[in-house]
Amino acid sequence: MRHLRKIIRSIFLSINMPLYDFKCEKGHIVERLVDNSIHQVNCPECTNQAFRIISSINFSLDPISGDFPKATKNWAKWRQVKIAEERKTG
Image (cartoon, rainbow, N blue to C red):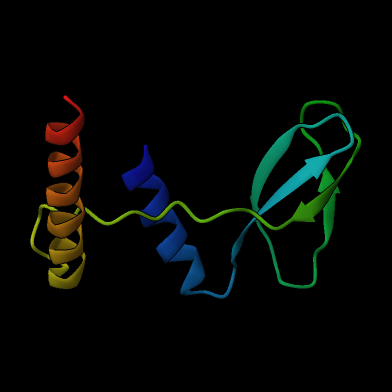
């Protein structure tokens, strides 16, 4: 699902239709591909107005993959510290 979402997002970003999150007053959150000038849409669940919100980015690095050498080094250093702490307390 996440992979498909990335593909869809990249296709529509290439034609200047960014994906935005909208939230209505009842708390429903919906994603829409809309023009930058659109700041509200109708909620599909309750038909109230849903306003554009700032959404968090889902981003993580896999420290073990080796694709990000600095992240891998930092993770390895952090892990060694944690192991040393566990040995002292355990």
